[in-house]
Amino acid sequence: MNSKFSQRMKELRKERGLTQDELSKLSGISFPTISRYENGQRDEPKLTILKTLANYFDVTIDYLVGDTDIKETNFTSDEIGRIFNNLDDDDKRILMDLAKTLLKKEGKV
Image (cartoon, rainbow, N blue to C red; front, top):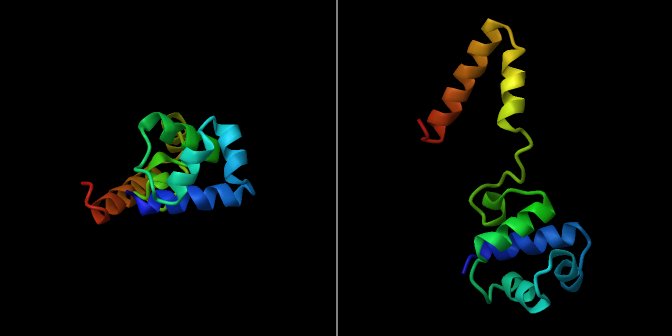
């Protein structure tokens, strides 16, 4: 069982000021299921339920299951491309160097 998922789900629900019953009605996930997820009595949900919860709370699935502490990614690839294309060449080089440095730091390059 993923205690990080249980913790995050409960925190997100409380941030919205919802009871488990209210979340159940809004999400279409049964009350007992929500209760068991939050209490760590049930394994992490299937992808369809993770998507439902992530969409409802406006967070990434990775955040919901505890793989990252970043709640949301607000930029689409198109938006990133538009921003990048509006930079001058020197700023593009700086941004690319920064991105590469961050990826190396995370072991992704």
